[in-house]
Length: 113
Length: 109
Image (cartoon, rainbow over all chains, first blue to last red; front, side, top):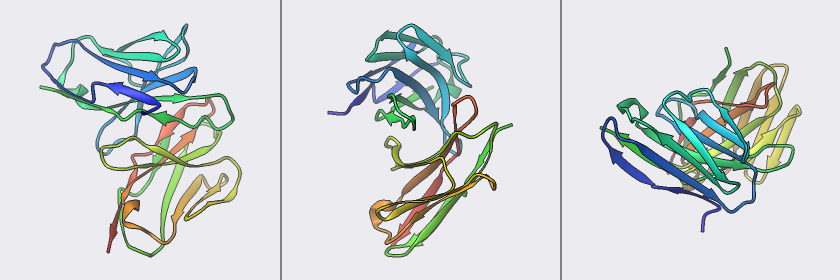
């Protein structure tokens, strides 16, 4: 089983719908992140959380919200999806240590029609 | 602004050597990562450099020159399974990761 699990893996929805992407991890890491990836662009940080009570906006947080329900769970919501939110979304974790290496989930491909 | 530059695409031959370059302009520097990403999959960690010089790990090596804002990933004895995108990412002064758009490496028999 994957250490970082994302659900759903694929989702097609319509403009204006509310969507939630869920992430759970078994690595015991405190730090969790949500990124989106678009063709030709680097990974862009949406939100990150360093512990259950700590939530921070990334560079592209507009139109998104998050919830850190527990150390192991970090959800991303699109309150009213729009077509330019069509992308591949990754959840990632990092643990204590000098490098801050990220461990990624398998990705959630979201299409907004 | 902060910027990471990598070639968009490279092609190499199975068994050969390829060097993927990454240049960066960031507000501060606290390390540089290389990740490998196969199509439709998650990125996976390859290397981390924080000091100048070459780090070797099997068929893969990563080099860093902080004064030049430059790194490269060297892949030797290329195999078909090395066909993937290679992502360069820099840790800035706020310990935020700045990502390049990635280099798609195509390996031909």
